[in-house]
Picture: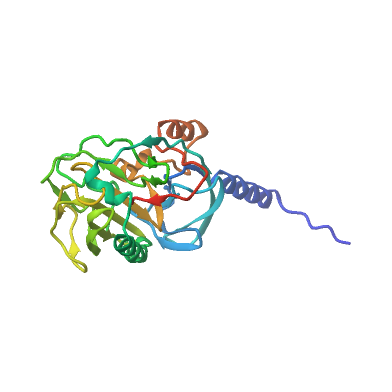
Length: 306
């Protein structure tokens, strides 16, 4: 039997490839986004989907309720070469918040048959647009602020709101205490895929930005766009209000990326703060420590506010 020997050069190449593959790992918290830069990316892959890179970088969203574990990720560079990697999901710690609704909002707890039927119809219509389209991205990161002056949010992304023994709601966006009447703006170029009054979220605008990214603006007092409108970054979508299940004027901003519910604040900040494949272990841990995401409870029998 002939024994095949690899040359020293070949062994060196294999070792280098193994090391590079082993190093292509990023750890992301539930509700977060991973990043892969430095390879002039053209396309990216995760969850069996292949989509365009954003400004030559790959981004990998992780749902707020994603289970711990590993996902295969891929990056195709400008020359068409595929690079494989791994995304590891880490748990976060989300709070549970007790809330009391005023009597004026009792209809949102003790829902009548007509309102329940309406809410189900609206839920089905919204579900059709949340996955987004995989058209070329019409955005860069960070996204633009949705209002001229954006105050600090309640840090309520991922919180489980408990209204009473029978009503719990997963808050998958962020609430910003912007005064009533202020203009709500598009966070990036895109197409309005749904605009109108919803039972729970009030006057709402959903914008598809391509590449699977959809932004949502809820509880508006008025809407300035309609289904099918093409909007530019910073263009008015409506005005701040308190419609739907809202106890006062504010903006609820939500984001879906590839259908995954992620913290919108992450996309309003510098993408350099996102966990990256290129991070050293110390850098990765620092970003994890600084992250604001929190862990949901084990049960999944909650309605989803956005």
